[in-house]
Every structure is written in C-alpha cells, then in structure tokens.
Length: 159
Image 1: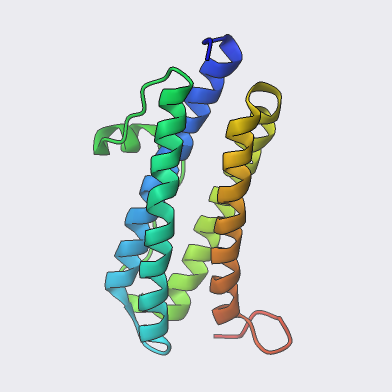
Image 2 (image 1 turned 90 degrees about the horizontal axis):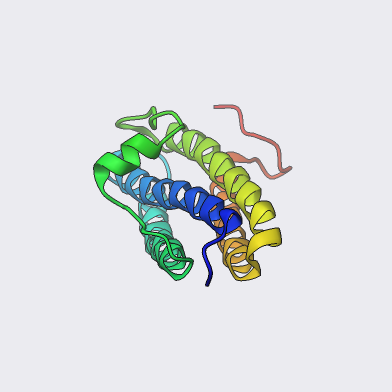
C-alpha cells in the first residue's frame, strides 16, 4: 500500500491502539494475580480468557501497521511514552474494586478504538473492519465485567 499522509496518520493512531492493547493485556494479568474475595475463581479464570483474546488483537494491530508500511513498536519504553491514560489504580483488592476499575479501562479502550475506526473508514476499510471486530470483542468482555457489577434488575449493585 502506498504511504500517504492519511495512512501515516492512521499508523500513528494504530501505534497508540497497539500500546493500549499491550497495556490492557498486562493490566488483566495484574488483576488476575491480585483479585481476592467473592467470585475470586470465576473472575480469576475469566481474566485469563480475556488475556488470550487481547494478545492476538495486539498482534493483528502490529501486523496491520507493517502492512500499511509502518514500523510497530511494542517495547516497554515506547508503551510508556505512548500512554496518555492513567495507570491502573488498584493493587490487591476485592473483585468488585477490580471490576469497577476494569470497567473504566474498557470504556476508554472502546471509545478510543471507535475514534480510530471512524478515521480508518476514510483511509483504509480493512483497518476499519479489523477495529470493528476488535471493538465487538472488547465490548463483549466489558459486558461480562458488567454482569458481576449489576443486580438482577440491571442496576449497579451497592457495594
């Protein structure tokens, strides 16, 4: 593919998506190791499934950057330099505390994916399609998180 200004901008946006997905994968493992309390085992195991789904998303984004003529960078330093979001705030804590924090993480990732998806629509529909698929998976993961935080009426439970 010819490198045009639109593709260059898209590659920069995809680099941020790559950093976000790598960050999400590491955050999910952090939560996996530090979650305690009610529903521990189901949350602990759910998070490993999420990691297994996020890892190939990062790989797909990196490979798309290369396909578009860019150079993906997934080094720790580049991820830290690229981050514009806050550090995950929870250490060892109850499932509810972690799931509430993860809900916020997923909201940010989904919103950012949607922004880049909209930009990609005019530049590269293949990238747009990839991001649509990833966003659907990320929203499904967030729905699972919500299911732990809601009561039977669909409202947030009072902790």
